[in-house]
Length: 194
Image 1 (tube, rainbow, N blue to C red):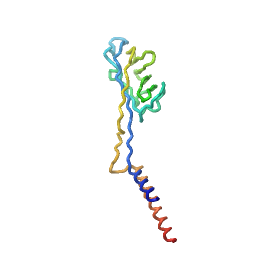
Image 2: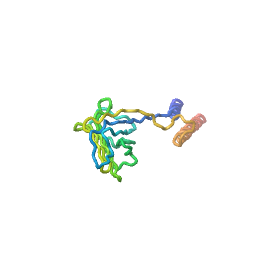
Image 3: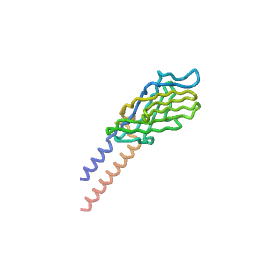
Image 4: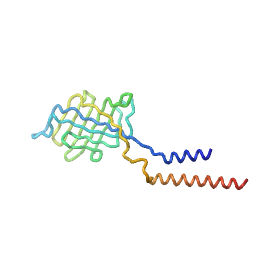
């Protein structure tokens, strides 16, 4: 039995695990109105877009759930190349609702940057839905359906099955070797006593 247990331990030790990330992306519908002094930055042919990534796919049955803590990365563009990312954002809010299968059915997402210039991008489905974007004194809005998020599952970029184990793998290999040596030594001592 001890031999079977050690074989199972070694099998687990040399098995690599692959994780997957869930990325939710949106290309919003075009703006319905623009504002600000001339020349205007935005046009009604422009639209916001962006994505956010989580370690795992959203669970089903969420209702206006705050998922800020689960978002590992995000990037949103106002349609003019002004991008707010996790690296430069000064505030963010991610609230979502999902159907039983985990598909996003409603959302209210706001990312902002204090600037200068101050910028913000908001996409939401409540109150009829829409998009609100500001960049300094310029703004653009969409009244009505903002669009919907699509899901992409991607493998973790960490390479698995490498020929050189990582430091933590070496530590586990060393520990397993010491444990095996201890069992062998213990069995040898037991044989001598008989």
